[in-house]
Structures are given as structure tokens and as C-alpha cells.
Image (cartoon, rainbow, N blue to C red):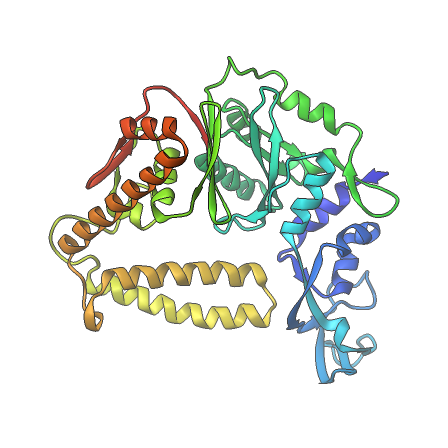
Length: 411
């Protein structure tokens, strides 16, 4: 059994979690066997290839494809450069790290309650790995993140806290990547951030396993918390096509609907007024495109700005695909979809600006109807939760969740 510290550092250092197998071998070194089983081939061929001289990091080698079995990696230094390398197609296929498989491997090693690992699409290099059973009997969601620096880790934790209320386990690559104040902020909310380098080791077969100190570290992270010290926990989390619900000792599943999505967003933001248009658009922050009861949803200048940015994104997507930048492609696709949604919502027939007064009323009706339908579905499966929501949800133009006691919702 050996340490995984160098493996996690190598993964953190990679700008994108994709590359040819030789690049992965260089990055992972002696730990390549552990990572090889987590790689998945893509349908892309790389445009460059590592230099045969591993010590010469400045050597850029372009891939020239003449045929499947006639490929060459040519040194770009011209005369005096290193020799051309003969390759075949399999050598230049880009492989990406499957974060879901990595999360499952980490979860299995640490004995987490494994669910289907799910990527957090708004947070790059972060995936939900399963649940860690709390000392008080509560299953806290555990997330694996390979965010590359302190600021990125802080952003990941901030967003996950907003989603879960802070009662979660963040598994960071190495302990030195977390600012003390960020770790303390998570701890006081009943969560913890631990280092994968401390928790996970590699056995003689290249399999990720729990390090000998892992049980003690997990116990220390949560062992000092009792049910009496923390607010009661409840679960309202989407799992595939259903929602898993735990409340007041009763568990059930409720079918997926947009109304359940709206309720989950309100539960994440207790005692906070949210405009129905914001909720419909899946946004719960202070800024909104809705400015009043009259006028255009977006002025013509802003609308044209969105369209110009969409044109730019198309070019950037092509560049990212050529570089095999998987993370960049995903980020640009998310931005593109968001902008397209804004343009669709802001325009009517013929692409003309839509009036806010009409949009506001449609948002109120759509959100209210969806939530009432979701509450009826909840009532059939979990009457105590229905009663709780019926007495604490304000539904109308402005919505809010106002419980009479603190509840740590896990969403």
C-alpha cells in the first residue's frame, strides 16, 4: 500500500482532465495503473504528442495523420530538433478522466453509501460521490473535487454550502489547497473538508483503498457532533427520475416534476423572498432580468449583446474542440444554453422583445400551478411533509419558505 499524494497533485496540475495515454502516463507516473481504469476514450484525435525526452517539457510535437497506421509526431523546432516519432491511431486518441468512475472508486474505498455519481454541472471537476453516514445517524452528501487552486476550491465549497446548507463532506485532493477560514466556515455548519491524499491509498494491484488512518479522520471530522448539537436534518434530493424525501423519520419517493425543482430551490433559501420569474428561470440571487411591471424584458442593446456573444461562443467552441479541451467545451455549452434561454424568454413572435408585464404574469401562474401540483404529489406519499410545506410556503408573485424552526435540508 502506498500514498496517493503524488497522484492527486498530478490531477490537480492538469489544465484539462484529458489527453493521450502517453500524457496520462507521464502525469501519473508510478500511479498510472490506478488511473488507467478510470480513463475513457473519446472520438477525438490529439493535435500534439509528448516529446520522447520526458525531461524536455518545452518540446512541442505536432501530430500529422496520413492514415490510421501512418501517423507521425513531428518536432516543431525544425532542424536540430528531436527525432520524428512514428505512431498509430490508438496512440493519439484523446482519453478523458471519468469523474463519475473516480467518485465511485473513492466512495467504495471509503465505504460511502454509493448512489449513482452525478456531476455538478455548474462546478467543473466536482462530482457527488455518495453519502457519508454521520455519527448522529444522518447521511451527509460527499463530493470529490479536483479544483486546481485555493480560490477554485473556495468557490466549490461556497456553492455546495448554498445547495446543502453546509452539512456535507468535501473530499479535496490535498490538504494544503484549502484556506483555514474556508474549512472552519464549513465545520461550524456541521460539514468537513478532508484530503483524499490522507484518506485514500493504492494497493499492490493499483486499486484505490482506504488508508489506515481514514476511519479515524472521518470519525474525528464528525464524531464530536450529536443530534442535540445540530438542527434536525431532512432530505429533499433528486435521484434520477424521482425525488428522495426524508422528513420527521419518514422516507418516501416522489415523481419528478418542475414543481419539485421549485420547492427544492425554496428549501435551499429559507426566509428569502424569490420572485416567481427568478424561480422559473432557476436563479435565486439578487439580480434579475425582471425590472418592473412594464417595458421590455431586455432592451434591444442587451439583446444584441447576447446574440453577439452567442456568435463568439460558436468560434470558441470550435477552438476548444480542436484543443481537446473538454472542460472548456462544457463551460461554453452551458453559457450558450443559458444565453439562448434568455433570448427565447425575452423575445416573442418574429424575435421582437417581449413585454415584462406579460412575462411576470405567466411566471406567476406557471410557478404557482407547478408547486401546487407537486404538493399534491407529496401529500399522497408523505402527509407530514405536505402539512409542513402547506404552512411554511408562500406562493404567488413572490415566493418564500419560512419554517418556524431551523431545518438542515440536504438537497
